[in-house]
Structure formats: C-alpha cells, structure tokens
Image (cartoon, one colour):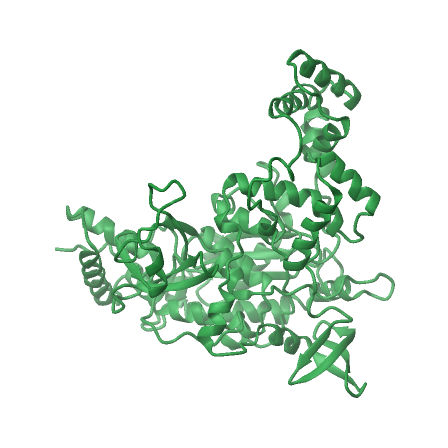
Length: 636
C-alpha cells in the first residue's frame, strides 16, 4: 500500500507558523517537534497540534473556504467498468509507490506483463503520487486497448476457468501444468495463448487465504491465518490494522430538557490493533448503519483537537491518519458500495470477519467489554443482565445526557484507558502507539502519520450518494425540492445519448436532509443546495420516512411537499406535547435538539467555524430504527 505524498508534518519538511518558516528536525514526542527557523537558525519547540491546525486553518471568508474544501475526489462519477480499470492500474503501480519502490528492471517486467510501455506505468504512478487520488487513474478517452492487460477476452475466460477448476483444487497442479492446459484449450479454440507471466501474475494476485483454503483445506487455512492470543497477523505497526464494531452501551441517558430517560445509546468504535489505542468513535441514539461506520472512520482519521475543544473535553488524543486496513464483521452496514469505494479511494483495505471465527474480532470485542465494565459504574447502568441488576432501576437512576456521556467516554479514553498498562501488550496503549511511530531506542519508528489533506471532502466522501436530473424547479429528492443558482445551467440537461435526462451526483447526510451537496460538473465542486422553500424545518431521512408512513396510514400516499411538511410539523407538535410522558417522544425530541450540536462538533474537527444557527434536529439516523415516536401517537 502506497504512502500518501508529501506528509506536511514529516521530518525535513518546511512549515510556516505565524509568518515564520521552520524546518522540522526531530520528533520530541507525540505532541511536539524540534524545528529550526529558516531565517535565524534558532531551534524551537513546535506543538504538533499547531502544525495540524496550520494545515486546515481557514485562509479566507468562511464560504470561500468551505467551497474550496468541497472539491470532488473524482471517484463518484466513475462507472463500475471505469472503477475496475482504476483498480487494475492501481495494482500495477503499487510496487512503484511502495517503500522502497520497485526498481526500473522490476517496473519493466510489470509493464511488459501488462502489455504497456514502462513510461505509461511511471506516468500513472506519478499521477497518484502527486494527488493521492486513485480516481486519476481512470481512463478519460478510448485508447484502443493501450493501458489494459492485452489478453483476448475469450483467452481470459479460459485462464479464469482453468485456474478455478484445476489450480484451486486439492490436486494442487503446478503453474507449468496449468499453462499446458491453457495453451491446449486456446489452440483448440483458435485463440492466442497468454504469456506464462500473465498467468503467474493472475495467480499471484489471488487471495493467499483463498489459495490455501482451496488447495489445502479450510482447517489448514484457519490454522495458518488464525490470530494467536495477543497477536493479529499483519498488525505490526500503528495503523496497520483497525478493527471496528458496534455495541449498545449498558447505560441509560436522559434528555436535556426534562432530564428523564430516553434509552440506551449505540457506540461505534475503532481500535488500532497494534497499540490497542482507540482510533475514534461515533455515539448515536440510533442503531448502527452505514453513516455510523462512515462517521466513526472519519472521526478516527481526522485530528481531534478541535473536536475535543468543542465538547469541552480535557486531555490529548494524538491519533489521526489513514489505516492500511480496517477489519469488520459481516454486518450489512460494512458492505455498502460507497463505504467500499471510499476506502479504496483513500487506499485502505476493508476486510470482513469470516462467519464462526470469533477470535478474529477479539481485540475490538475485548475493548467493548472494557467499555461495558466502565459504564457499569455510571448512574443509570443497565448492567450486563437482569441478575446483576437486581432491584436497581436504571431508568430512575439515569442522570447523564447524551452529550455528557460523549464527553465522559472521551475523557475516559484519553485520561485513563490510553494511560493504563494493557495486559496484552505490557504497557499503556499510548506508549505503545508512541514507540511504534517515534521508535523506542532500538527500533526506528515510522514517523507521525499523514493528516487528511481535506477534512470536509473526507466527510463528504463517506456520505451516501444519490443521482438525480435537474428540473426547472431544481432537484426533487423524495418529493422535496432543492434549489441553488448553480443548478440553472443544468436544467433538463441531456445525457450522452441525447435522449434521456442527464443524472447528476448528489451527496446527502441522512441525519439532516435540509441541505444536499450537488457535484457541479463545471467546477468539479460540491455545492450546498438547500430546500427551495428555505423556511421549511430541517428533518432527518428517518423522520421523513415516518411522515410518509403516517400519511399512508391516513390513506394519503400521493403526498406533495406541502402536505409532507404540514404533517411533519403536526406530528412534531404532538411529540412535543407527549415528551413529558413517553420515552419515545422524548428520544425523538432530543434527536432534533442535538442535530446542530453534532454538526458543530464535526465542523470543529474539520477546522471550520460553527455553522450558522439552524432549527434543532436529531443526532443520528437509521432506516431500521425500532423507535417510531410519530407512530405511537394516535393522530385524528
């Protein structure tokens, strides 16, 4: 996996702080760097937090900064076929971007096997090295076959068939025997046989586990790849592997108005397997979904100083950067198309735990157990089971709000968990993390990780994507119209076939659908597009679906935008009246009040100022949520 280019906080880099240019000389610890002033040669101690802030500090009016940060990554508009070409080319250039990079001789061999000139291979590698974007490897125009693996399509099918039927079997045929069969089949079909190196490369790219499982059996593969106690294969340095999972916390929280219980929150957590440090988390009042996964990863990848200031948390959380791989279970929220493509764009692998192999998730599950034990000491804990709970009434004893619990977890992570010796590694997680990055006197460290270059775009890239055409009234999404002058040039624009309407890419945060992000093809930037009727209240996608379900129960399925918002406000008033009496109504109202706070914290982590005041909304969303406060209120 290639390293991102030009790490702005790597040793040897020139940085500018408060108008003074420094050269970074040596890391003192995770929080400070020794630097030399370029003008005087004077040595200075700079904080890592200041260096990171300098990379994301707004340099102009807020609106201009946000617009600049919403440039497209480019991968959204690629078809599945184009993305497949990107993946093939990425595999070819990976050795050139590795550390150390492939030699010229090795590059020539790779190019020859792929049927391209070595200069083309280096040109692709330079594109990725310059921008860090895999999307730059996408073909822009037809090249008549240049840049692709030159093998006849039918020959390719023969190769795939022979590998599947003869190589991946218990018979364990050699590649030489395989080539004889491939050549014979191609001759009988009147096709040119592929070069042996092409077949070898195809086999080399197969999953090592798949090959071992098919040729030696599942037990042999399980024995070979199973993690040993205290060890996870490949987790040999910070960021090599993160594990991510969800759990409902064993504690009840209260709303911030009536201070009465609203249920248990869900925690999505990412752990760095090497150091056992918590890379990041996402707390929600809704069950796990694709947004939970995306926002947890974004929280883990971004520096957290601004976020911690926004929630008034003490301590330091010096973790950021892109992992090499993320290991998750087989929940549907981890298999979303956009999560998968975004992970490839940011060049980390998504790996899923095999069914019935609990030892593969042991690190994250033990961490979840540690967190469960910690919250058992809080007022309002539900404990692990009813036997432990006894006569304790968590709903009556609960005192923490959602935001207070979020801050408590943050300070527990930074001030206690990271600082306490871990039995599995024999030292505090933060010390293990520090030694892995900066070295321990005997082993050289890898250096501080590359911070994401564009925090706002990173968050957008992990948001769900939809496609719509532009109508005269703007964009129509789920019956609601959105408008911005940037849409005008694209009204009823035709697709390439000249007949159908062109569909444009739109990002939407399901937690707040009052604004969507339109990818303008002319500027290649995401433009925030609000409701056409700007006075409409903000709502979540989950709330919109509940409104539509209520209208369906009332026999009014063909609802227009006015009826949808009238019903939303009618149900909201009923929820407001009922929240003093029902848990579900209080929970719904709390989500609305928390939405603005959630966005303010996310913007702080991105290095942006707080958003302008907006109507309060919810802190989370899920399309399988079993909490439906509108539904439990009888509407006459």
